Length: 407
Image (tube, rainbow, N blue to C red):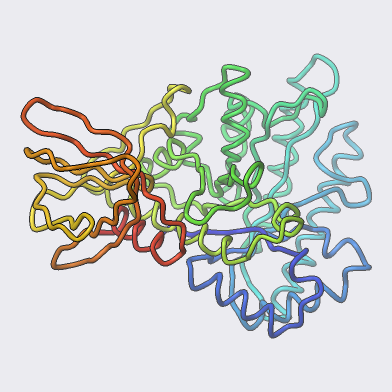
């Protein structure tokens, strides 16, 4: 199974006792989370020492891989101003990574981890000098921590001119860096939301070329629903085309499902929704991986059609549908997360004002759905009856997704 990560929810865990955190961590493990992303902040902010020690104690009991998100240390980061400060920044971050490695080992948390950096801000018109300095920074840092089991990652970033131009905004930045940083412990963190914005607004490629795909070690999928309607059970709007590109490329990267935890807590959204969303991601990754074993996955880069075509499961034999207690043998049954299509030569009595209870039954499964009739299509010889699925309960939604993606 593909590796899945989420960011540590320090808002949730700050006031929780160790046993409660451990129960949460076991729940995350059970649905497929193998890696946690932790900010440098819990090490750099001395007021968080108690919280840091509590989290590390829990992580010594419930094992996860660890990825750190780097940030400025005493104003030293990747931003280039002069050679002296850049060298000092490399020294500061190398020493800090050694301290992290020692602490994680001593506390029996992890021996291997990764660190994600963003690129330098570009000042002035000569971007070439910033390219060269980022190559120098990452070559020196990777060499400096080469005795550790640590990966150093450069993250792709969204173009935002309020923030200024950053190295990593465009794929040409990434290509320049990877062609000149030849270290095995260097890789790319692909923020898929950022590249979607850049492809739409600035005509950058949606999917990078294979030489870049080969270097991607971490891929961030944004749970878009957290921006509007909260985290919905089994309804994560993810970047399917990018995921398919990585699976086509046989990439062994970690897939990170990003949440806006402040939104979750401010709106009292159950943490079960986070676990459900992770489990949903495991279904999607399993489905695409199984499909890749049969054929190359089709990738659609047309902005008007992305994510418009739902994944559907088709049944043609040994399956019946019971509609409001009447049993029918349909020629074909198609199911997606949102609707069910029944195909038959005969037209049966129908009403759009009636709630239809449809039971999909075979030797292997039984699924009961509450639906409303959306439309009927006359195909001359047969009819398609299309029903909208209304079920929102966790158990039914899980069964529905398992039927579509895993069967």
